[in-house]
Image 1: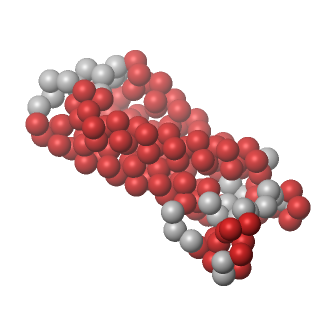
Image 2: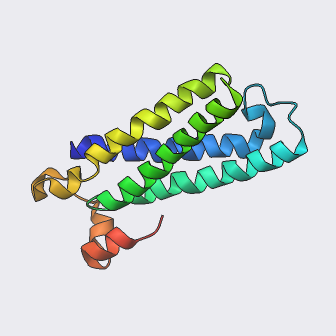
Image 3: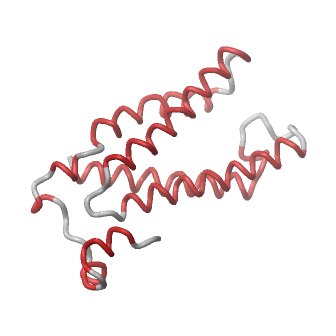
Length: 151
């Protein structure tokens, strides 16, 4: 379970970074059906894309910790879940969005419970079951320094 957690945390981080950069670069064109939404929505979308890059970097920072901190995973997963709840509110107020947005809503509501369930997998794992940190990270400043080193 610890390896599954580590893989999902890394995948989540990289996916968010790539998606965020896509939105920063393309603006309205990154949103199906929003190409003609205007300058205000384009500005907001590019800003939110940059914020999503930061969110992805937070996931990647968590992935670098040994062990992966359950509290951080739960907080980040909670933010993701809140995004899915926001999409549900939009659905209730404005109706059904474009099909891809529905697929994203399913992911945003379905993935957080998996993260909540796996969050403490590395913290619970016997010490030998968590893969060792690379030698370069172990040597400079001990295990605490390796855990607290920024990206």
